[in-house]
Length: 248
Image (cartoon, rainbow, N blue to C red; front, side):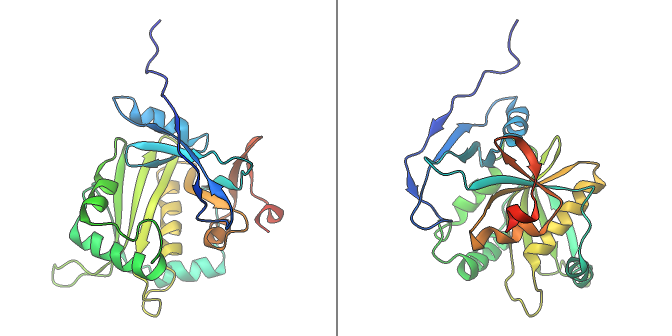
């Protein structure tokens, strides 16, 4: 019998300084997503903790450290708390559109402002227009860019204030990368709203999970992900609930 697709070849990166936990080294294992079965391969790998970046699927493979844990929200069981309900009401006027994965200058300018404000020294800070276009358009799977705009007037679209590059998988939505306006006085906590909107979209589509990438206990940059429970984390025993004790 002929296998439906060739088993992928995996590679390992050289150790680099960990961006989440000081004094540690990170290493990744990765494989290429290509060919007619890229979608099925991406779905299968996501269920064992891989994430997509352009046409590559990767996951941490760090010597002596397993702090990075894949997490996913159980969309049908999620109930927003009082703070999250207030946030949903605050941004209920936003116009949300799932667009084909095509990079625009408006999106890129929003990304530049976001990186300058939130991650000025990060690895993406030097992204130019071509880098951004590659991030959005080099997708071998079913992807969209979800845009969040303020209300338009007279047929003119409103200000773009948020974006999320999102993959549609067989069992849910995977939030690949989100960015947004950081003028907190006018539009507070947009990043949290984008996650809440994706949970609602996943539930409406009849899908069970929203994949949020990696959660790192002890990393302040990742602490926000534990707010969206019930949530599952991937560990040695498979997908298990993230408890209050786990979340710290």
